[in-house]
Image (cartoon, rainbow, N blue to C red):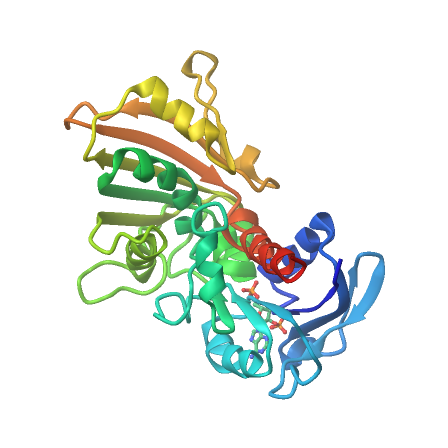
Amino acid sequence: MKKVNLAVVGATGMVGRTFLKVLEEKKLPIDNFYLFASERSAGKKMMFDGKEYTVEQLKEDSFDRGIDIALFSAGGDTSKKFAPIAAKKGCIVIDNSSAWRMDKEVPLVVPEVNPEDISWNKGIIANPNCSTIQAMVALKPLNDKYKIKRVVYSTYQAVSGAGLGGWNDLENGLKGEEPKKFPHPIANNCLPHIDVFEENGYTKEEIKMINETRKILHEPDMKITATAVRVPVFNSHSESINVEFEKDFDMEELIQTLKDAPGVIIQNNSVNNEYPLAVNATGHDEVFIGRIRRDESVKSGVNLWVVADNIRKGAASNAVQIADVIIKGKNN
Ligand code: A2P
């Protein structure tokens, strides 16, 4: 198997460190391996696959050395500036920020849902928003079978989605300290505010879920609304998803359709109090679906509770899966 030269940009961050963990687990065929972060981290040592690597400061000439694939998670500004520089040097960037997601020249990919979009990349592939990724794994098989008419997303998002700063706000907030990352205490609280507010009263996180869903499912006119809420959970996002279909459905068949879908685990047994939980999803790459029940207020609709590890499937694992598809393609 042909090996690739691979770089991680933002290696010291929460997603960056998980990139390393997932790359080790999935045993991608890596030849040379490079770690980049900001000036602050230059010289820092990090272990990968039993070897010590030195973190380098990301610079304009960082990609002048035959890097095949770069996994970026260093914020939108870094991606805006450095992803095109890397792509120009022949590197394929898989970018976890929101900088390129809605660019018409950039595919937005969940490998279980639209792997075919990887092929038309021009050097940058975007990893969707964490809340969108887990919803897509659940909704794609249902859209294929019953044609979705309308979606209502309500999210319960973990603090790890806001990086180390978010994590620290919950940890320190539980000890009575004031928040530094969030505008209000997150400990013992729910904040209906993720990312910045737009003129229409939605937050950017909510708009991302709406627009990214349409792009990934190739359904530009799908009716979608969203409310995104930060909750005092360290890791794994939970979502209530209400879906209305064009076609009628049989409940057993719908559950079987989800069971057969790639990357899905069904936990749907109310008799045993069995349903997806954030604490159980953490550390896994699958999307857990439960509380599946008919929405009796419409002709054809269903409610789902969808939980996944936002740092793994919602970010690092999804990007590594994309890299895996690219490497397998190079080897065919
Ligand atoms: P550093 O640790 O040197 O600041 P998180 O979202 O968990 O806070 O992580 C953000 C990641 O992005 C970190 O690895 C951080 O590196 C990196 N980063 C931030 N700004 C830059 C920059 N200008 N160039 C390269 N990496 C950056």
